[in-house]
Length: 598
Image 1: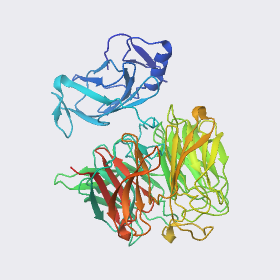
Image 2: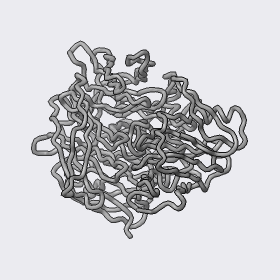
Image 3: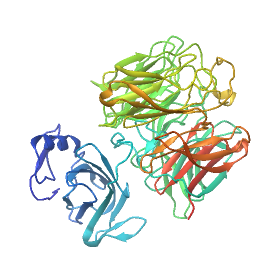
Image 4: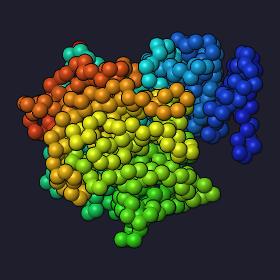
C-alpha cells in the first residue's frame, strides 16, 4: 500500500520490524513528528488490489491540527494520521464497504469534530459512494468537514478500536464509562416522543454503525434477559433472542455488554459463555440474531465486561467462586484463546461495570478501587486503593459499597484521572485518583448528609469536570437490592453536583450543587451541544419528563413530558444519545425515543 502526500515521509516500525510509509508533513519539529508517530499505528498491512483509489481531504481545521482517521474494511484495518492542510491518497483498495472514523486534535489539545463521525464508503469497483445516502463521491474524493467551535468540556479518551461507534456501543457511552458523547442530543426545543411497551426493562440500549438498536431487556413474567434488535424510528422489534437467566445476580447474564467493531453484541451469559451475537437480514426481509462465537470462560456470574485497547475482553464476576474468595477479575485473549484471572480478597464483590483506557482496566469492588493490566500473559493488579464503604448500603443504592462504575477522564489525554464515589456515612464523598499511580488527588463531600448524599449512578466525567447525580432514597424493586439499608428508608429528593479537578491535578473544587433535581435516570452529557440530559420525576404528580440541565450552572433549561404512569419510570437506567439528535431511554415497561420535532 502507498499513502502518497507531498513533503516528508515518516516511517513507523512495528514489533515485527516491518516498515510502513505514513503520510508526511510540511514542516514540523522532531518533537511534533514523535508525537504524531505515537498516535499513528497501522494495525495490519493493506491488501494490494488495483480496484480503486480514494482521496480524503479535510476542511474546517486550524492549519496545525492533526487528523486521525481509522479505516476498517476488506483487507484494511489501520489508524492513519495527517495534518490539516494535507490530502490522504489511498491506493489499491479492494471492493467492499469501508468504515471511516475521523477525529482531529489541535496543537493545544483541543478536539474538533467531523460533521459525520462515522462514514461507510462503498467501492463497487467502478466508483466510491457513501452507503445509505448513495452519494457518489466526485473524483473519488471524500471531504471531511469539521466543526471548529470550541467545546466547554474536552476531551474524551481515544476510541477503543475493538468497540463499535463512540457514544453508542456500551451502556456508559465508551470504554472509559464517561457517560458523555460527541453526538448532539435532541436539544431544548419542541420534541417528538415515540414510546413502545415490551413488558420488559431495558437497561442497555446500544446502536451500531448500521443505525439499528441492539438492546438487552429483562422480561417481567419470567425475569429472563433477552436480546432485542429494534428499528430506530418506530421502535418495532425486528428480532429477539432469549438469554440464560442468572440465578445469582440481576446484573449478570448480559446486562453489561457492548458492541464490537463488527456491530456484534458481546456478553457473558449466565452459564459463563462469552458470546458474540450478530444480526443479519434474510432474503425475505426478516431479521435474525445469531450467536457467532461462544467461548466457555468458566465464570457464570459476570457483571462487568469491557475490551482493553489490545482486544482482550476483560470481565468481573459479582462474587467469589467460594465463601473464602472474592470476586474474579480476568480477561479472554482472542489472539491466543487464553484466559487469565485474578481473585480479589475474600468478601469483596463487584456490583458495577468496569472500564478501560489505554493505561489499563479499572474495577471498583465493594471495598476498593483497582487498576489492572495484562502483563506477561496474566491479569495483573497495578494498584489498589481502599475507600470508606460505610456501615451498610444507603437507601437508594443496590449494594453495600460504591454505587459508581469507575470513570476515566482528564484534560489532556482524556484518561489521566479515575473517579468513583465512596459510601461514607452519613456524608458520602466524590473521590478522584491519578489513574497511573493510584494516588488520591482529592475528596469532596457529595451534597447534603442524611438528605441526598448517596448515589448508585455512574458519574459523567470529561475534561476536568465530574457530574454526580443523587439516588439517595430512590426506591428500587426489592429483588434488585442486596442486604438491608441504613436507614431503612428515606425521601427521594434527588440532586446533582459538579466537581472540577484544579489545574495541574492539585485538588478538587465544587463548582455547583443542585439540591432539588430528582433524576430517575443516569444523566448523559452531550459535549457537542453542551447540555446534560436526564429524566426527572415530579414528586407531586408522579409525572416523568426529559429535562436538559446547563452543565455550567446546574440549572434546568427545558422540560418535555414523557408520561405520568408508573410504566414511565426509568429506574435509574442510562439513556443513549445517537447520531441525528435522537435520545433513546429504557423504562420499566419498554423504551422511548426523543428527537427534535420537524
